[in-house]
Length: 66
Image 1 (cartoon, rainbow, N blue to C red):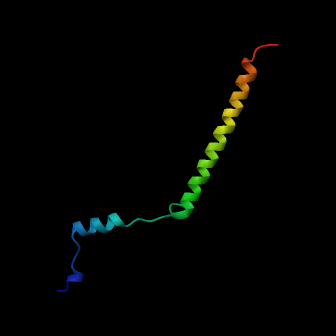
Image 2 (tube, rainbow, N blue to C red):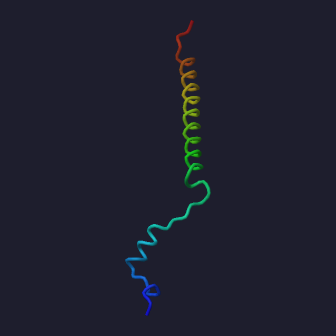
């Protein structure tokens, strides 16, 4: 009858489904990049603090006695 009422073939449906996706809050755009930047900065700061603490412990444990 009318071509736009025709049932979609499997090939067309899979193409449509492949391009459809949903984003929840914080999963994309600038908020996602801001979140990733915060996580990276936090990880670097925590790593630096932990390494300074371990270096201080090793320094005081293994320094030569006076």
